[in-house]
Image 1: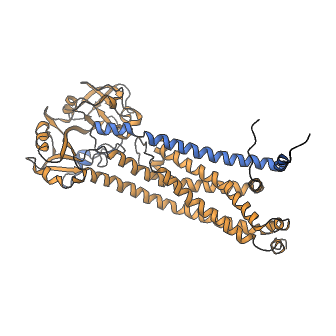
Image 2: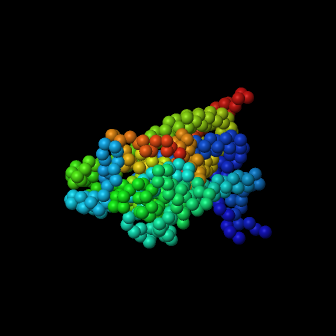
Image 3: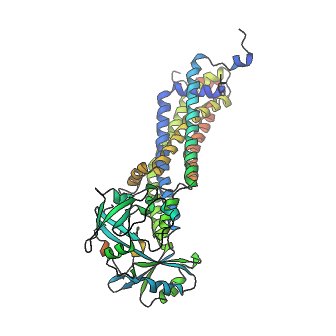
Length: 95
Length: 385
């Protein structure tokens, strides 16, 4: 059976087939990782933290809840140079 | 049958070269991946914290007015303070707040009551509490064994938990206990017409500093006014400090990058005799350089992408983000870590360039240097000679 010259020129010798597979894995993995990260980023940016922001506004909270309740980072309005935080003393454990 | 993807023959040769040095290539892959992961995780985390705080603090009131006397904070008369604040030009929507910190089952919790009606769009199916009921955040709910929650010591109050704030609101509600104003006043020891403090929004946010003197003068007793900018600055400072720690953590990683580059230089110099053989078979210097660049790309691009994707997952997916925060903040448990990812793409690109460009530059330059010369002179570089 006659093989077209173009195809004949591109046929890989047997030792190169593993290399071709390695190349496919490298290209495919890279593209998959880029697409997954970019897709996740786009989805997140579209609607991230809207619910948390809405509750911040509804409850007129002054700071996010990343830090322990009672700490100045959580309740910045409790910081005063003349008033210590005695009512928060010892309350160091997060719920 | 689908047509097979046709790769340039030089890329297939480069893949063969990777296979010929499989152990060394895997080691290089692992080094590049872990290097990118370490640098990207630290920088992404500090940037994400900064972005998250900025995003949430944008919703916070511009000013908070608290009444003080010689003993500390004093409750305010809710109706009167609204009348006082409304008289100050530039003040919008003065809102008395009912809130306080009280001991909960496993530590302090933030008790809040909303005097205004919470919009249905915000509630999203959550039923507002009635007397004797409460809606709690994820952090509080985790400590409960049944539906009863007992709060406070001086005026203890036991309420029934009717709902839990959704996990995606955790950045605002993690430690919250939402109760009725009556229950909150009972728990905090406030009279029926009293509130904890006053939240104020301004017509122009730029007036935050300027308006404070007028606002303080409008009340018949001493007050302490806290502005949003000071709070944002405190958070920004914290994020910048974490970013500084990230840079310090990156120094060993950069040294590792230097060692990888040195290893690449030595590797390329050691292959001079092999390249001389290729040149004697008809390869040109450009062919050899292209081969080495292709080989570096086959290992480097997946390694950098895997490192970046792992760092992205470690920072922006809540269970892993908690572990990352514990690592970077030196043992602090940051609750409900769902961080904002805006600006992350720029950081990822910067880190890819920071690691990828020096690596590729080294491969290119050392290949050009080692592949230049006559085939005979290069063949003499064989250690057997």
